[in-house]
Image 1: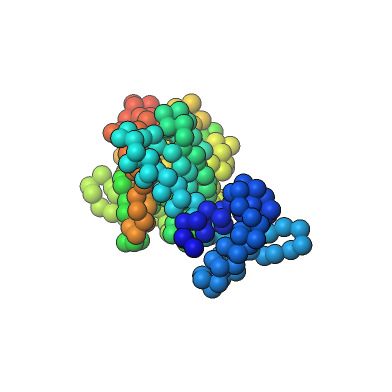
Image 2: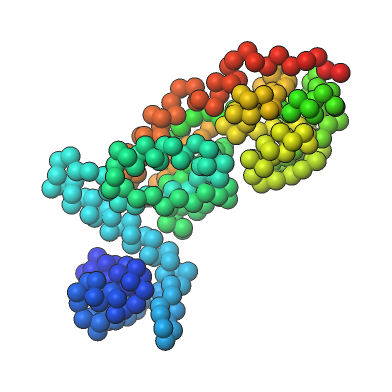
Length: 314
């Protein structure tokens, strides 16, 4: 049996929810569908379905295989179209993993534009701050905002991510504005729990000396938007990426402080597995993101404006 036909049969069973439904979709006998599934599981030496009297449920292994089959079949279709049509439209599904706050605040408009340009593309988004294993979990690519260490991935730099220390005017009026980073140790701070060293805030002083300050947590959270809201509510000082707090700064809900010091700059990257064939739709989306976020990101414009005239510390 041709392996692509086995994959198509397997996908048909998953999407139809039963052998009978797949038989009707594929227009082949139920016995042929059953035989192909049995042959596939025997060849792979795995169980792809948990079988009950009413329906077939994918095992964890089956779910992973299903995701890979979808990509492979879409790639085959795309390859055939590319050969038969010199300027073939992009089509197929893109599985993309994106950090939650960045995805909600910035990727949505990008995807809207891409979908309008390429209406045959489908997106499957995972919005989560957890570290995704792209190969094991069947993703085409991910957006990562971090210092990259995984050499098995190919990365395309998209945009710088600058951090800014800020607090609400009400908090600063009540507690005073820090003169220098060591002063932060005496303040209530809001800490991102997923940082490599939560509560240890690194900086570079105006003379180029690198240092850090250990701050105390009034609140710890694994989501930047939660910390931004807590800062707006006056619960403490936060060190956040500018793409999370830029609107709050523009609307004067948060005030940048200690701006003469340099806080961490990391980069947003589009990453994809080195061993994975890069399809036209993945390459097109990566190129699109790189062009969209080129230059000074719009979320950093508030940091370039002279709107940081904070009152003198009390």
